[in-house]
Length: 356
Ligand code: TXA
Ligand code: MG
Image (tube, rainbow, N blue to C red; front, side):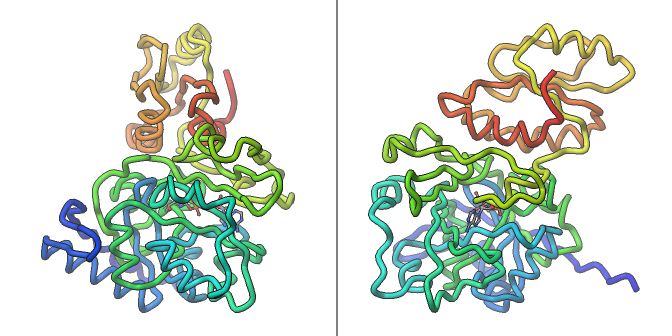
């Protein structure tokens, strides 16, 4: 029997109408949509919402049913744990940690600087921890962050619930940075998408583990390696990839990721890119330039921006656009991993089949 598709509603909100301390939503439509979303969270259903990094697919982090619904909608492998989103350190302490436990000192300065914001930390799962074991996928730690996007913050506050949220894409696809990307992947699979416009950062949060010595950067993201190093000079970057059967600290790293249907190639060599376009006139080839490439004749040319911040912001949207435009192959101008480029190249290397 074919299960009848669920109707997916897209609800537009105005993030600029939301203010905090105390929470005030001046636009009535925005408030009504946020209340509707909060009700879905409270009743253990799922909702897609914007964060400053990418759109998330959220559900009550304390409910097995809600978390199962997240994994099912995305088709996500069950051994890839989720990030819990909280409104504040105060809510984290009150809802998820024992009263006598204090967040390890090593995190204090990083959190003071980057929360709310695109930084995720690991904390131990302690006896009595209410986070669903499906969120942690059996790990002895859980990942948590305080997002800075007003819609995300308001949703957590209105539902008064820690929200587990992976990126709101279908598993293996580029993460969504606009509501239309979520609809493309999850239409008919989730009840509601809150549309708060496009995401500022454009790629996911940085995941760090300060519970080990030396501390580790598990996933590069919106806070750069260089920024983390200012607080943790000894931080090491965890192994990039792993075989399908290998246990890794961040299980997400072993899966195919961020891939458009078009085949993606990387290179820093302009002549090789030009030659490839010339050799493949039978294909629709696009070139995504960053810092130095000029337009290449015979290809569809797009500029991604020159700084890691600008490239991060446009990367996933452009990869998705390649599919919309029926591009067969994409050549992306690679950038150096230093000076903030690590997160961009991490995503691109996963999206790509290789270097030219
Ligand atoms: O910016 C973000 O982090 C977005 C927005 C929605 O907040 N979320 C996101 O979630 O990117 P997701 O599920 O796509 O990626 C979560 C990453 C995965 O690489 C996962 O393996 C890792 O965090 N992770 C989660 N819990 C972990 C844990 N206990 N130990 C190690 N890695 C963990
Ligand atoms: Mg993801």
